[in-house]
Image (cartoon, rainbow, N blue to C red; front, side, top):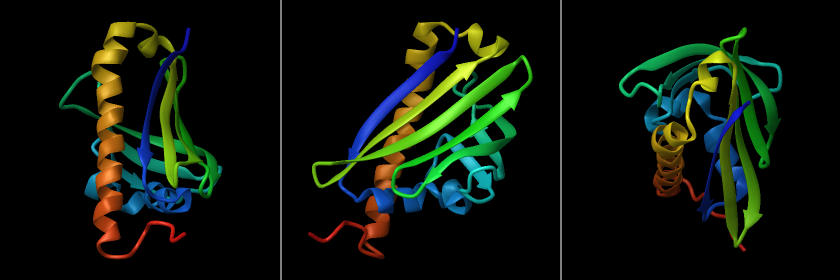
Length: 155
C-alpha cells in the first residue's frame, strides 16, 4: 500500500512567482533543505539529477535522476523517482490561488519495498517535518527575493 506525505502552507505571493522559485533547480542548493541539489529543467519528460536529504535516515542523502511528470507554470511541478521494485516516489508541488497569494500543497506518494516498511508514525515524525521545513524555506526564499525584485502581485 502506498504511503502519502501531505503538507501545505499559505504564501503571500502569486502562484506564478512561487512557480518561478520551484522551477529554478539551479538554485535549490541556496534554500531547499529537502531537495539539496537539482540539475536540469522543469519540462515534462526532462530527466533531472537530484540529491535529496533522506528523512528516514537523518544526515544521509540520496542521489537519483528523476523524471519531470508535471510542469504547469503557476499550477504544478512534479517528478518521479524510481528504482524497480524497491522505490517509486511521486513528488508534487500544487499551487492554488488563495487569499491574495498561493496555497501550496507539497506532497509525495511513496511505494515499493522500501516505503512499505515505513510506519504511519515514521511518516509523521520524520517525513512530514522535513517537507514542512522545505515549505518554510520556500517562504523565506520568496521573502528574501522580494527584497531584490518585487514578487508579490500588485492589485
